[in-house]
Image 1 (cartoon, rainbow over the protein chains, first blue to last red):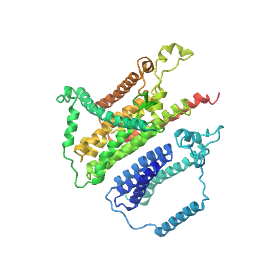
Image 2 (cartoon, rainbow over the protein chains, first blue to last red; image 1 turned 120 degrees about the horizontal axis):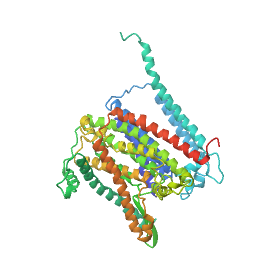
Image 3 (cartoon, each protein chain N blue to C red; image 1 turned 90 degrees about the horizontal axis):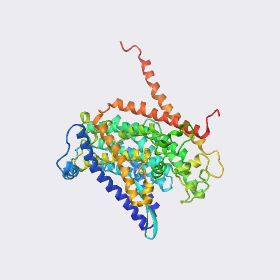
Image 4 (cartoon, helix red, strand yellow; image 1 turned 90 degrees about the vertical axis):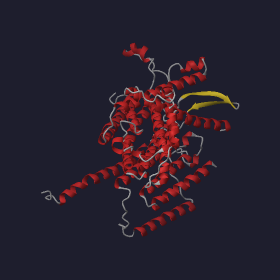
Length: 196
Length: 379
């Protein structure tokens, strides 16, 4: 009962926030809409006993990422008029196509029932128990799964896959720094003798 | 969970709310008196003995003041920002345990009443999460006022919050790792558990340092001793998170009038004011809980056994408040003695000193823990 009520409230908030991201005229309201969507997602995680993921969701997305978005929007200037000309050719058609593909895939997978969640050992809906600590997302449970102390014997755990995934983020960060760092050099090359 | 449990939860939450409100009243008075004393003034003297009731008078006055709304403001967000700041300030204190739990029979069942609104297994992360939301109140207040000085204050608040949250989080990683290695499989991020881990004193050692045993066995097992660098970083970042002097660039009077709350008046201003003092109290309470043993202190168990558990609870609450007020005095002391940092100094301290310092300590601390557990690599 509690779950249905909470889902009703925060599901509505999430959808309204997501809609306001694309519909709001003012970029600040878009950012706020995205923030409320992220916050509602954290509530969903808590409803599914994923306390750790919920806390991280709020710290990383609602806190850090959205604060940076707001910072950039305010730094560039809130009142700057938006360039409405579309840069990418055929982007509307591509978006419609992609959206339809996703929708059809979802329907086929759910109706066809041949979709299986990939779950960590010892967790997942099959051995779901709200009272057992090992099957919900407390930090102890996540630690046990991550470092392979989940069952009676020690396994390799999921630490290595986790680190590999974090490598992706580092590559993206290094790429961003490289892009920002090497751009001024080209500008200097264009007019080297202009200063005198 | 029956109705009695529900009632106890309500009592806890309302109790914390009332407790914080009354503390803030005294906090404002203490701050004014201490700063006045440091500046060779008397401070408030008129309302009540030594001006104790001055805050009450100011609060009542703010109730009846006109609430100005600037013509260019975004009204909805302008209204919501002060409420958001107060809500996050109160939410953050919910996980802090402030007295010894007590057991009593109620409704035919023995229940444990914890003096903590709720104990989360992600308590430490919850604090970081709420503090990262708290910055929205300042940013949105600054932006929605529709005026340039508040906007500048809001932009400053964002940059400051991002820089110092990172340092704060990183300093706590080392602390949590230290706790987790010592207490395997325990609930290391719950605030109540963190207080329990710090109970008692160090055991006697053998070997060449055994002559120090009379001292060692009287030293409490507070995390400040092994983790002093995280404490320093956490304390500095805590002052920056609460936007207090010397990190109060968001409301720098000489440059920005009053910063993000320039356009606020009446109760809406009072909410920001209330939130600032609640945050200051919460930050001090967090430092006490994480590094100084929370409500723990000497003789609690023997008092509970010989005099009575209620007395022990009261004494532990006294310990907690005494420790917290040491830090609050430090907050005020810093404000009275240090000049405000320049903006580039603030950024440099955050990114070039605190974050590398926290990272270095994290590496050093984990190396030490690994060596202690597995021995040196060549042995």
